[in-house]
Image 1: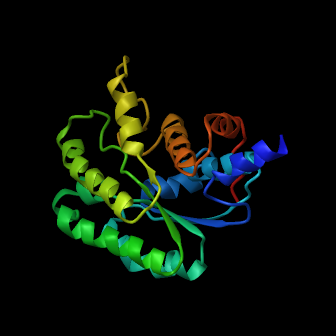
Image 2: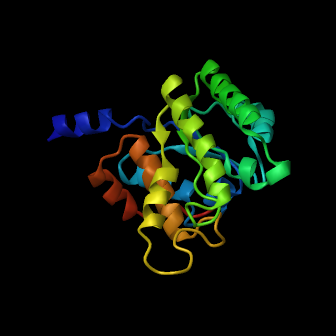
Amino acid sequence: LSVSSLSLSAKVLVKDGEKIAFMGDSITQQGWSNPTGYVRLVVAGLKANGINVTPVPAGIGGHKSNQMLERLKRDVLDKNPDWMTLSCGVNDVWHGTNGVPLEPYKSNITAIVERCQAKGVKVMILTATVIGEEPDNPNNKKLAAYNDFLRKLAKEKKCPLADLNASFQKVLKAKKKPGLALTGDGVHMNPAGDRLMAEGILKAFGLTNRQIKKAEEAPAPVAK
């Protein structure tokens, strides 16, 4: 039993005692400020499996790739995390003419990943979730190119990928009832959306289905 337990934990990328920064926009900010937010669920899910991590919340509402790059040193690198999850893309598209076009977005995200890796910070890339719960609306169609880039970059830079967009699209395409399923307003998560995000991140960290089930039964940590 001890041998199988060791082999199980060896497949999990994040280790007990490590520090994880969560870089993002309002989805990530609420993922920490909300007691059932995805950041809290990830921390609680790891703890339920014997992996105690220190979170570094780094989500700021409205931020796009250029702003995340500008504050990367202050909000992440200066805090010396072992890991950083990167959630960026919704505002770059959603903000329209005030957003960030695809080519500058690619440059910004590549620079973020490269600066982290140069400092020894491992990066998990999250694909951007949704802009409205209609999978084929214009914003989601535009977002697809940004997510395709993120998938490609994750391969190139050997970063774990949590393909949250694919998970969200799958749920939304199977949705039978009218109304919102994963968000409160088409963008920001409801509890089901936060759970789906956390599940995707835990899977990308290497947790098994059994470990994720254990994680889902764990209470989220109390806000400090």
